Image (cartoon, rainbow, N blue to C red; front, top):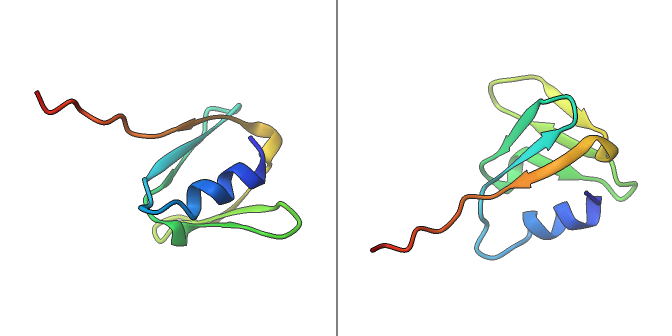
Length: 73
């Protein structure tokens, strides 16, 4: 997953929450665009209110999970 793709998800309008899954099994929740920062150099920084700040290596990202829309039927 490229930092550029993450930036696109963060700046989507409207914003849709998503999760970042790493090869280690660790999952980072991105409930709003303020908890994730992608720097010009491509560093990914997750700043959760309840946990410590994490620096995510983009090479370790295996999946981005976004909620599916229900059909409403």
